Image (cartoon, rainbow, N blue to C red):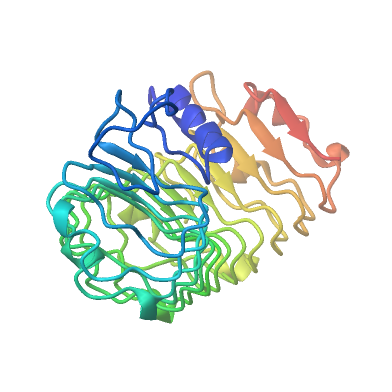
Length: 342
């Protein structure tokens, strides 16, 4: 079995706990006098002089950023626009730009601002009023978050040269399957893509084969294309809860891939347990319409070396009950620590 179980668990917990405010490298000490190279409305701690903190100050505009600043925190303000020239001193040095929780629209982002940032590594733009992504030219970009906006399109080609991009989170937007055609082609190092809470009818096409985490909960997905997961040989976690999946939309063996550790199909309209691989450890099927416990979906063969590695199986909120399990289930599910029916 792959030795990544603890890292996977750690990442899943970290995502749950730090989804909105994961500015991990902020210095612990932010108070006291600012250094001389700082805007008057912000703080630049002496012990972290390359960071400028302008968060939670009721600012309506992005201040002019002095030379030498690499980390810029502007979250929790009333910023409505970004004027040309504010980044002119840091076009090739600014690494982090945090703009969460403001009131920025695409129309109020002037040319000569984000489109000039050639060294940016992290761009956080959540909880604003964007209707399409704002992407810097930087090839160093590794993390992009545009959650809780009004994105209705994600044009193809925007990420084509982002060779270091590992994480994209665009949950809670208005994206449809047609609006994201080819949007995620290009980044060869992408590990995580979160498209939960959008209007997708199908899983995004053309995602990089490097992907390890794909989240598309709370959409309108009715089916998964045959061979879709075969193009993602490293995928560990797939979440498709709260969609419109039905048995006819699940091709035989589509989830039977060796890399998957977690599969969430809860809150759909499935009537049977889909076929999975014996390496899967977490399977969530609660709140479907499952009528029968089909052991062959979990174990094709059972022997001393061949059995399911499921540890957690949720079947509550279905038609079947614990009495539906065949007697030989215990041999197939020998490592399961909990199987929940109610």
